[in-house]
Image 1 (cartoon, rainbow, N blue to C red):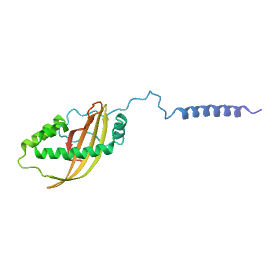
Image 2: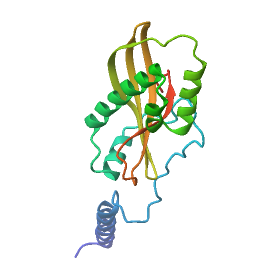
Image 3: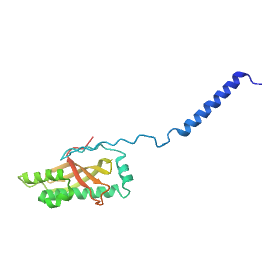
Image 4: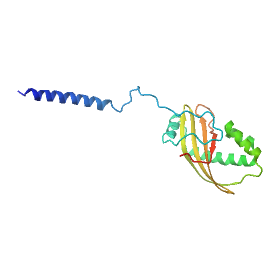
Length: 185
């Protein structure tokens, strides 16, 4: 018959084994009692300010999960087209073409730029690059920040523009809500 120390050791090993098995089967699983993820609050006003979104590896994924029809290459193609249309309409002073593409705050800034200019703006020669540098989903508002490298008649310019879209809206178009000349870090 085994001695009492061996029995105690076997019982302790069995208890430890059961505890380890239970921990292994529970740890890393979602139970529904986790706190909800904290979304960064949207700034209340952003007229022609630097984009407030930091680059996020999960921002585009969040947008794709919230809007299954979202397609990143299609968005970038549309962003390039929007950049060319907005720059062209600004150069031509075409406020009617600008209004549906810009938020009210950004439109006011562009309108003031059109009104206050004393010389014609430089012509856009070529849009060299467009890349997503930030993205986020705040409630049902998707924001994507794009860095554009454009060649104008006067030189190369880097513009950083933030586009926004309410995913609950039937309108599939994105609106320019902020502009900057600095790439967010």
